[in-house]
Length: 421
Image (cartoon, rainbow, N blue to C red; front, side):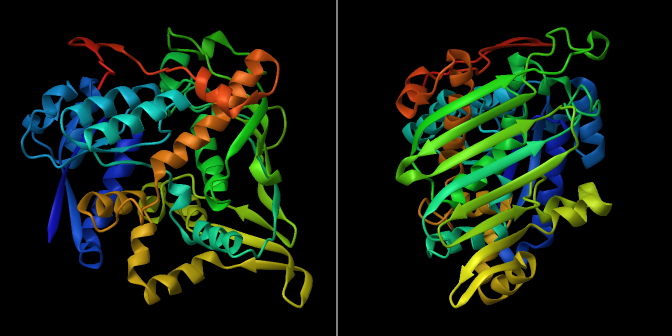
């Protein structure tokens, strides 16, 4: 059985979720026909690095302060990038240039320009490259995508994403998260880049990746920031609200509202309207898939395991009906009928299958391209807000700028990232 040897860059919260999933893959190796083993990890924070090593039983020789030293090993097959947003392009490109295929945590980057740079680098250097978008990896997405492709909703004309949190600013309202979530330098942007990546990407994917025409948007930091709660010297620099109307070819539009802090109750609504029917997407997975459930425990794990759909409209002779579609149960049956579908139920499983050639560019989900097109929408939102007018897709592509970090101060000196390739 093929074992893929993984090196992880970044020892923060998300790396632990990835470790849980790798362990689950090992438990299910007979089903997949492959497994994975993390053999090294790099983390600049000494305390975090030491704690990580103790937790997973790693020797000091396999723990690195400088990821560039880890990349010199001769026993690594792939790199798993678990750093924060504006380091994704910097670190992923460095790993690709060192000869490695790369699996990158979401968001792919903070801007369309950086995502395109990562994709272009992978293509030029011949590297395989994949991005974590857990909302795609379940039967909710497969079922919605097939219904739309089969014409069961008719002509699509409108979709909506409303994602409102009363107080959910990571690192600020939620101190268990790093302050890297709210500094402009590292995070880039706020809620639509953080959790919105899952929901916008899912909508675009199930709707068949419609071609963007224009975006009209608005972004702001609406709530007052208490300086006493800002512990990072770089300050609180990301927006807490973004809204937009994106227009696509063939008369389809997407309306978005995303907040991480608002003086209103939490609520979420995602739906797609067509001439024959509509779909409401409920409990889309934003937490990592069933293999990550054991890390969460309790009600959170149960909720994560049940992404569902509700259909409204006409089904054949049945008119104006409401039907709850049991995605979870149907998905289990589908995998029994076609075991290969299990490769589509987890990000890391899909990545490893793609890495090994079990899935190829025609059969895997092209998550880098999906994520890049999602970032074209959010870049359009921010650009429109800055300019005070609607912007075209061509303007977004031309005006999107890199936010990738090119110099990083560390305890052992400055890392200079060369983004050329």
